[in-house]
Length: 339
Image (cartoon, rainbow, N blue to C red):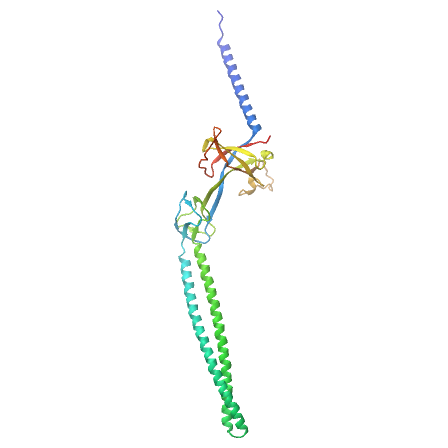
């Protein structure tokens, strides 16, 4: 009876495993080649949307906050208040100064009315003195009045003429005071309006509709001008931001279709089109842009930003409702190559 040695059995099993591994390897290589032939693939991608940074315009302690992360807000909603007690005091002081200026202006107008009346009285006295002077002058020429009487009449005439000039000057002074008072009141009104505008800076307002994505401060913090207090995610428009290796860039064009999956929804396939191709590599806008001036240089593949629209979601080749997507979700993108 023929028997097979254990060594031959082991050799046969090893050959079977080797063939199986080779078949699997060939199949994987074929699938990779098939995928590479049809798609440009990358997993350096994520959902993105417009984000608005809401910053303070003045320095003050944070007094109150009215929203929290995740709250939906409308444009114009008050998000927070800063301590405005100093500006309120300045506004009250400016209003008090304006009231004092208004009172002074009323007094100047009364003085002008008085000066006009004084001018009328001075002109009456002047005209009477002029008549007396002309009469006594004729009489003095005929020796009808004494020299003393004529001299007294002449002095009264001259003094009343000077009083008319003084009254006219007083009117000019009063008019100048009124003009200065009106200008001062206008300046005070402008200062009050400016203070009221500044007071508005202590109320942090939502500039757009959206969702509070992040709070960057808390009540009690000392806020600096330009400091970001909230980040609002508009969430109305979402797209996929892709950072594609420059070696794959030559096959990219606007309007090119793409499919992508999201880690949050692995059973869904999303589709869209490229609507933006960056004009600079991503490293150009990094915190520390690359510089080769030192002579130490390591060449790395640069990445070019792309944006892909989110148009529809598919599940097993059937269109389904778009799920709730959140900016920042990781994506794996397959850009369909043109034939």
